[in-house]
Image (cartoon, rainbow, N blue to C red; front, side):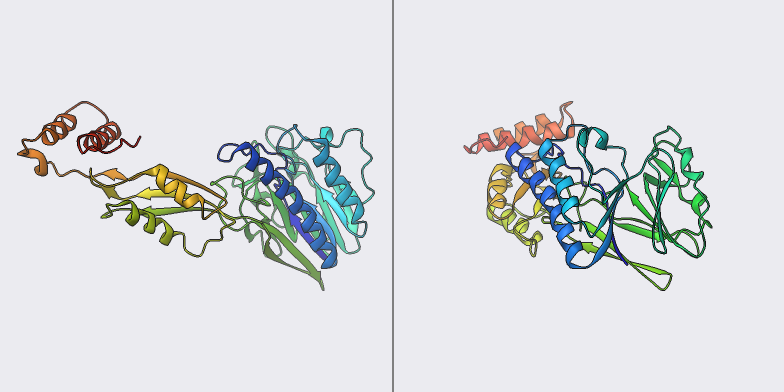
Length: 357
């Protein structure tokens, strides 16, 4: 039997920290459509069950359109069973309120619940207490079954709010723990028999969620369960550090940005981080670089972590207004960041150039 393990779709997320309102809405539509594409994949590949390990929705603010789409998509794939375990962000009780649930959608609750599909037993619990203690009171599993456990929380070495002490689940005949909560794929051994796995989020929504995103395909055969991560995101997010040390002109820095992003799809969301050092006369125009890079990718932001480099000896005996200005700022009580900005703007003004804020 084939199964899909996914989690953390965070549907109807605002996503306006980086994106405009229009692009945030577009990304939400893409993620919602991605769920439909995943189900089409499942039908095409003969998948028998989809395990959704929490955080299908982002908050209690779930649109009727989104809830209807999810339920309709599940209902139409009648040959597939969907097992949905709510996470710490989910308000599915509200999202599905007043709607008849498809017969092939199976839910969990605050008590342990198990479903059998032939030799496969899928068990899960939605932890809601402060200490997550109910997790460890799971029913005894049969060693001859293929036992899959669905949970949502942070794998840890202790128990606490949203923390799951993985060591306390060892030696219970578990073959696979389908986890949700972390937004990157991760898989480790549980014990001699089983393993625990985060499928990661379905699509990256911010630059703390860079890297490949998708879901996990499980396949059971002869009492053995194997899994494979399947990249499936429509867009990928990257954070790219670009060293501008030794560069002085707009063209040189623009080419450095382009070189650092070589091979990245134009559909991507890219955050450039300028690093290294620059001199007072360096042509560092962030707005220009942003406009150039925005023509190459779906979304671009630029964060400047480069630092101004000034050799005081260059200005020690400089009797020009520029020299006096630089010495005065360097000897002031301003912070280093403030000094950098003041010196750069001052030199731009003294050189007759437009001041770049």
